[in-house]
Length: 316
Ligand code: ADP
Image 1 (cartoon, rainbow, N blue to C red):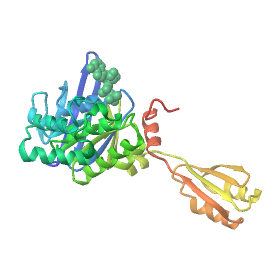
Image 2 (tube, helix red, strand yellow):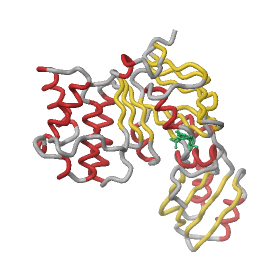
Image 3 (tube, protein in one colour):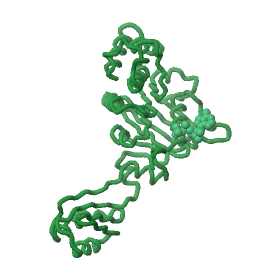
């Protein structure tokens, strides 16, 4: 039994009219994990999140959350989920603290527990000094932070953050990232969607990549990197460029090309040739190197290879 599976979605189908938004989706998350959910626009991430939160029902398959069947009528499960979206749902005419008390009250918190959670959340999102101010006086990033605090004031076991940092200032963005890390350190299970690869790389312990309504790749960052074939690219600056050096580099097994510009050498080898040591040995024998770097594939390359699309539509 997978008793510590917080979310278990099996063969889930969701249709909007004739359109199939979730097409036999299999998605799971284990207690304590921070799962990065990535996918190009229209992949079905929001639909998957709405389904697992019980905001919409699937047309087929099984959706279990905390080991119990999820559905729009299962309000008990929803009490233990915190959903953070880009939409600001706080009341602009209530102060920050009043907003938090209101949302805490919706989840049945009262008395000392409500007071303690509200104070903790204000501190958590760095708004303790603004507790009595109304969000309409806040920057966009501060409003977003208050929004997060309101979504988490009931201390949910499962937190879902759907692109929480889109379009906000770097300071608030860093704040949200740090807060998410702290939440994870406390053992909260988190699903995090983002178009920012570096955020996902920094926060997530596992990544599921969705495309066309299903998960097409899943694993740790290292596992995903290992799943694609990627050319090895070594840049080096030779102490003494020479034709001899170029020819010897070209002769190394696996080397596909050597580009020389002045003292700069770019050596491209086939995927997995692992010949950095041989390249260095040849370079040292031919006068040495003054600098050296290796281009590693990143999550963006994995994503592009698997989906044929960029993480963000605005990238060229
Ligand atoms: P993502 O979050 O990955 O961008 P969504 O889950 O929002 O993807 O959408 C998946 C697909 O389902 C998209 O093609 C979208 O246009 C479609 N879709 C989403 N919601 C609805 C809806 N309420 N009615 C019809 N089509 C929808």
